[in-house]
Length: 318
Picture 1 (cartoon, rainbow, N blue to C red):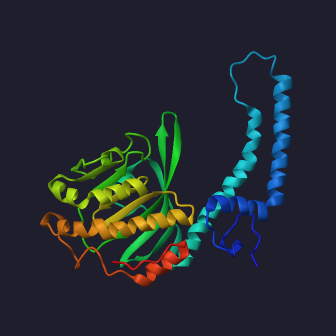
Picture 2 (cartoon, rainbow, N blue to C red):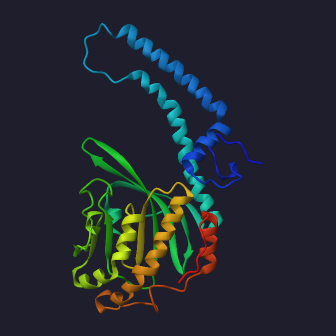
Picture 3 (tube, rainbow, N blue to C red):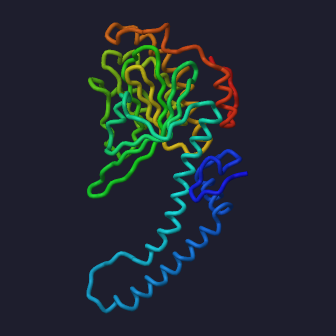
C-alpha cells in the first residue's frame, strides 16, 4: 500500500508516471484533495480580505500605480502545485532509473563536463543523475538548471542532459538551434572553431560549429536527408561533442514521449554522425583513438529494456 507523506516520494506510486504535469494534477486531486481545497479556501478568504482592504482604505490616498495585491492570495494554491510538481519530477527520474536498470543519485557534480554549454548562465545546478551503459558506452542522464540575467530580472532555464563517453577523442562540434535561449545568447562555439554554413535552409534553424580544418568532412557527414530529419524532429535539441564525450541537451524531460524522442536522436547520432567522425578522430592532432572505434558493440538487451519502458517499438541496432 502507498504510504502517506506530505511531500510525495517514490513509495507513493504503484504505477509509472507517464507525464509529470498531468501526474501532479492527478496526485493533488486523488491523494491531496482535502489539503488542496483547504488551501484554496484560505486563498479565497485572503483574496477577499485584501480586496476589501484595498477598496476601503486606499482609494482616497494619492499614489501612483500599485500592484494588484489581492492576486497575491492565488500564490498559495499555485505554490502548492509547483511544490508537488517539482517533487514528482524527482520521482519520475527515479522511476526511469529503476525501470531501465540505471543508478540514481539526487545530485551531481559539474566536474569533467567540458561542453561549452555548461559555461552559459550563472548558478548551475545538477540533480536527478542517472548512470549506466547504453550501446556499450557509459552514459549519464541528469537535469540541469542555470540562471540567465535579463536586465534587472533573471530566469531559470531547465534542461535534461544526456552525456555519453567514447573510447577516444573526437573533434569538437556544436550544433545549436537558433531558437535556443534568446536570440544571440549562444555565442558558444568550441575554441578555435568556425561556423559552417550548409546548403538549403538548414542554417535558418541551426548553427553548426566545427574545426576549420575539417570543413569538408563535416559537410559530407551532414547530408540533406540528415539535415531534413534534424529540422523536422530535433530542432529544439543542442548537440555537442567535446573531447571524448557526446552531449545532447534536451528541453526538460517530464514525460515518456520526450524521453523516447531524445533516445531516438541519440540512436541517430550513433548511426549517422559518430561513425563518420571516426575517420576524423584518427588524425594525429586529436591524439588518435584509444580503442578500436568510438562505437562499441551495441547492447541489444539494454536497448530493448529501455524501449519497453518508454513504450517505443524495439528495433534491432545496427
